[in-house]
Length: 117
Picture 1 (cartoon, helix red, strand yellow):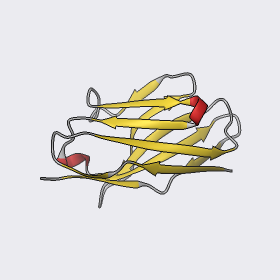
Picture 2 (cartoon, helix red, strand yellow):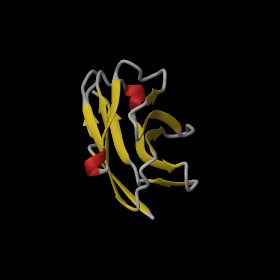
Picture 3 (cartoon, rainbow, N blue to C red):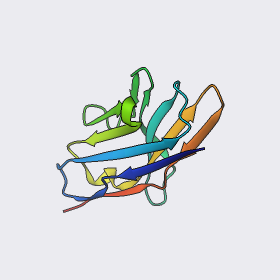
């Protein structure tokens, strides 16, 4: 079992920045993919960014050049640095962990990001 806890959400003005953190605890297999998804009201959940345990990254086109995903394997923590935030980035951001070897995956409870003036 893996437990994911997100933090760092909040209210920010357009053009501002936030950094989200996701701390993982429990049985973490060495080969894994950590990611951030988001879900806005009335919309489907979408992948924002993902990072493998060896550091390869993937981003949604809508956040490329604005968001950066990173991880600290020693702390089992993944981060999402969000810059130049736009109102359309408003959503609940959820942390996700996938373990290809075991075929299991886990979700955090989510953290709300609101971009508004």
